[in-house]
Image (cartoon, rainbow, N blue to C red):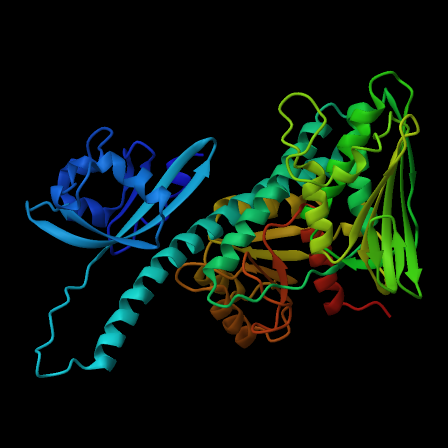
Length: 510
């Protein structure tokens, strides 16, 4: 990962530096260059160029020492461009990427504390207000960094996921590129988790959105298809999915990760002898009283069970009780022993349970239970026929990548697409006398005129205009803006399905 991708404080009013573990300054924002002068603009500048001896110790020892006892802020004295020494409150953030360690230093001018006269008490409210202002400024530094990174990250992921899912929808099962495309899609979905976590941190409110109800058959099918394409010649696959599966509220990316880990173990257990068999089935389970399935105690209620069995060598009785222990593994090589521990954590965090039963020489069965709602969600077929349309759609986004992605997908499915890279241009297009679009798809976060203001202006021009807004922020549909909502990043099928749904509201079928 390049420093340019993660450094999002270029326009901050306070100095900010991006350093590596050797205290080399990889990036310095404009405020840092103005404060410390040209010593930060040369080739591979180091922290020692602005370090004051008053800090004690060598500058290259500062970050390792901070790592041993990290604190949110620390006081530093640094040499400025005019040769003077200034005191700063340094807010430090450390993170690892691609095997390297990086640090973000945000340098806020330290407030000078004058001693209060002995006979005159200091005003406590003023002191508290000053301290609160400094604390708020520090928090704003971290929030701005997280918000900037998550928004840009989400936009890039939306383009990757949109184009990849479009290609996957057109690639036949035996296409030589299909496996690689599925890996790209899986990686993008994992990256989306990181972006969503950053987005949650950057918002002042810390409400965790409740996962929408979904069909586990979709995830099970996707996982099986990946392994079947890779091992179809050596393993016989038997897939038995319940047609009327109960709805489950789950994080799709995490549950897919859990099922993938179980299937990886099943594939490895069957070996390459050409006689491997793996069965994947889903079923509804309704319990009228608490039930014990080996190590898992299930409360009364409805569940969906995903069961994966193989005819491999099985697990030894002395090993079976330890399989969920972190860092425990019987595999040779670079395995870290986190596979089933990760599965256990994901499933139990969803309120479910995972059971592994096995006998040496008789194979292994893994049963994943997730709490279900007494409602059915049928799979979407994802075929072009039910996602195609002929309507005109205006797409508004300040990111050229996303305009291209949306235009490519929607045009490919029969829609006529108009694009605008700002709210002002969108309003100019809507104000013309020619035929208006049938739907407006707009981003919520744009410079100048934001999405919410654009929606209000559209309501004035055309009150009945259907609007679909998109953003990486969590916001329920039909609230705040009165428009439908699609969260970034999204796949091509999700975009097409939501467009179809919003248009269907405008033209209901009798």
